[in-house]
Amino acid sequence: MAATKMQGRGPPARTPGGRIELYSPTYFGACALGGIIGMEDPWQGRFSVVKCRRQVDPKIYSSNISAWRSIYAKEGIRGVFFGWSPTFVGYCFQGGGKYGFYEVFKYLYGEQMFPSTNKTIIYLGASASAEFLADMALCPFEAIKVRMQTTLPPFASTLRGGWGKVTAKEGTAGLYKGLVPLWGRQIPYTMVKFATFEKTVEYIYKTLGKPKEAYSTFQQTGVSFLGGYIAGIGCAAVSHPADVMVSKLNSDRQAGESALKAMSRIYGNVGFMGLWNGLSVRIVMIGTLTAFQWLIYDSFKVALGLPTTGGH
Image (tube, rainbow, N blue to C red; front, side, top):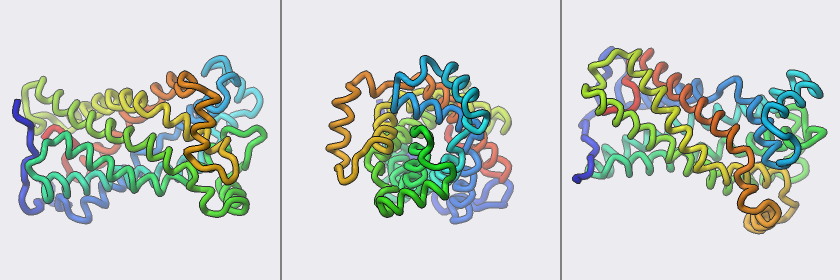
């Protein structure tokens, strides 16, 4: 079967509303802003605390429900959402970079550099490139979040306090000691997330039998939600072992220890099955969050007069 190709669009065109020129700097900036708005779900903190603690110590709670009950009983509502500030700031930076750079690289690779290349390869390459850059912004905040959520008593009570403690003891390098495993977790995750979303949306419209433009924007964003949920389940499973390793490294890496040596030591302690601790809660978290991310992102684009993602 012949490979599906990206269709060249020629020079940038204006959207139907005439407000933003497609593939212009303003367009890419709007996509980055949409990624920031859609990335951070205010309920993520309650999942993140439980997930990180169970990854670091699988015996600390017997189940997710008992974890939330225990945290609430001992620490109150603040404990349930503890670590929200580095989570919020970090994932806003990452969201803007992930979605904004994805649109940039998808246009650059698919329209300018490799217009005859299979679309799936373009999606995979664009998402990998975008995530590589976005993780550089996320990494310092992820390191602080994990330390805050996995140490009892807490490593720090605020983002500012955690930042100061890490840099005072380990320098700026301490904020980036989890960067390589973060890439290992996030790049495959994002490649699956974006490529699966694009192909799922394409398949949905093909199954419905009409082009995307034949449906209302409300219906199109509904397709985005469904495609996002399916993509979220896949990328959660693919990236989970690396997610566990990132949590372990940020909480248990010894001073002066190389990333490779630390990962080898940690794997020796937890084994293969230990890399899957917390998978169920992560599937619920990532599947739901990814669905709402795509819904919010594409709804924001529609509000600006831009087309929804995928299905072309």
